[in-house]
Image 1 (cartoon, rainbow, N blue to C red):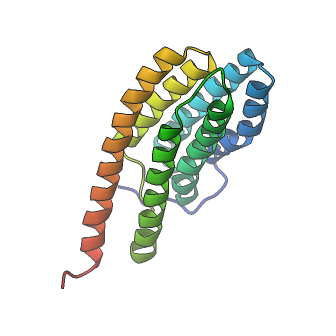
Image 2 (image 1 turned 90 degrees about the vertical axis):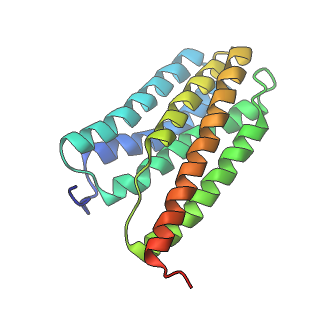
Length: 184
């Protein structure tokens, strides 16, 4: 496998940055009940998430910056929209999901950063994490559209996928840790 590039400015990284930049106008559109505008931004964010990785792999320009920025951009937009949905009484988004996701992400960030410092390697996301993100995006879309009952059941599937992906990440970190640290 080709080593990641240290380049910063790439089309893929620009698409990733777009997700960060679209978050404030997206939350504003939700707050002002401009659902069509919000849906356009959500669809563009989902497409940018798909195409940033696709273009990076296809053009062989996977970068360390992109590997770090992509999950941050995903979380930024997810958390921005989820916080809005939690505080919107019409949508009644379950706070337990937000808290579980926050705990998982904090755990993954701490262990991933620790291993990055030991191994000088940035770990890419795994397919279970991408599947989780896709199902979560669908649940959020349903909540945005005020289809809260359907959104809730899709969110339950996302919760199971969150737990599976969390387990996979922790197992991977555990294996990587013992590759670099001798067992006493």
